[in-house]
Length: 108
Image (cartoon, rainbow, N blue to C red):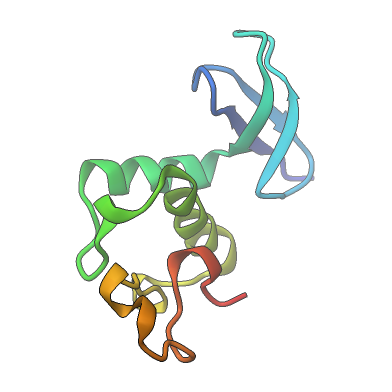
């Protein structure tokens, strides 16, 4: 049976292995003692890659940390690509955006 690694978002040092594939788990970290999210390590690795080298065609710096993790999660676990995401600017908020997909709700 495959196992999956999950990484603590508070200290980013602690990892645990589990036999199920989910986006994150919540538990107390044995390293830092924080109760919080441990995210799928593949998602964390994708997030780190984008932090070091932001993807073309997506204004990565405008995203909140949570939105960045959502983009990484959808790419790793759902097979989405950067082309599936579009960042809506503040100027576009008054426009009709019914066909616009944002990072926070891409391909839901």
